[in-house]
Image (cartoon, rainbow, N blue to C red; front, side, top):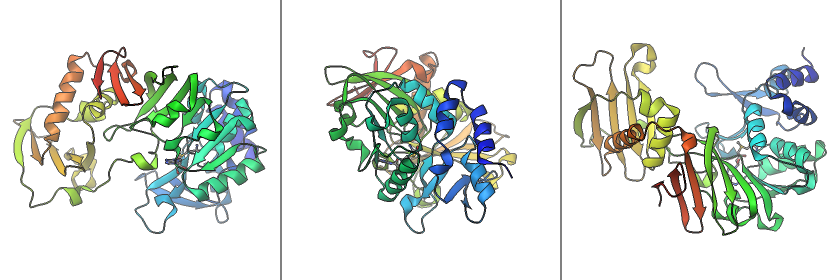
Length: 381
Ligand SMILES: C[S@@+](CC[C@H](N)C(=O)[O-])C[C@H]1O[C@@H](n2cnc3c(N)ncnc32)[C@H](O)[C@@H]1O
């Protein structure tokens, strides 16, 4: 049987050297509940692990460099098994904390308490009395409070509420660190950060799972900064893109137009920077890949593009034996494939910019996305 210390030491080796002592001081297993879910290796579906019946596997999972799900379906009964809270992947947590440039005495607001583990790490760096963390789910917040107390961080203020409102009584903050992704930056985060302070948040679109956004708050009530780093997090509750299975959205009675294209989905859908730019340019569009008979080995698949709001969809059929182009069908008010294709062409003509060339500015009136410098607005202007 491997001891907790051995597990801790093994995880430490996977983290940047500068972060090992901080993580060592905050034992992750103290923050994880008795029932957790890990990703199944074959299909990625959550597999339950119970501390009482499988203590060794549970402990091993606590110290793997992987996200651990701690709640499904917002804690409700039944449901599809949607992961609604995780203890984030330790190396990603370290990356975010490093980017936040924390130091003793800074006041920090964390959005998305989850297990409380990240709040405890932040507390090690800035002092527990300087940390406020907001969690929308009361049961999770209660679990985090207990774990924080056990870890000696009871002076972290754990608040139940909607983190999109921030938490003004604890402000102004030097740092706002979100551990749930947004598509729109809530303006209260800017208002509650002191000029010169920073906001660090995972940012995504319906099409792209996201990158880290690093905003600097100015003294004129705006915040601006660039994207950098592949950081996929779950959504804040109020900004989840609409779900929907292909069979519910693509119906036999739907009329559609049919064309062919020479564009293969590999780059627009699979390339991180291309799909990041397309997600910014084509709001609300999600993609789902359906392999024939669930067997990728056939090489045949269909990419579905769907917009829940308008009910529009497009299908993009890929077969290895293609001749004369890939078949595209489009239904609804939005011609989603055409929108994707135009955004992809824009990205290619712009010189295939990496996501780090894009940035975002937030004002009281909304947000705009730019390339290279804030004057070159590409969307939301
Ligand atoms: C990836 S988990 C956070 C991990 C956490 N920082 C930790 O160390 O365990 C995201 C959390 O954000 C919470 N959340 C989602 N929407 C929220 C909102 N609007 N306000 C506050 N918390 C929210 C979820 O319930 C979930 O617990």
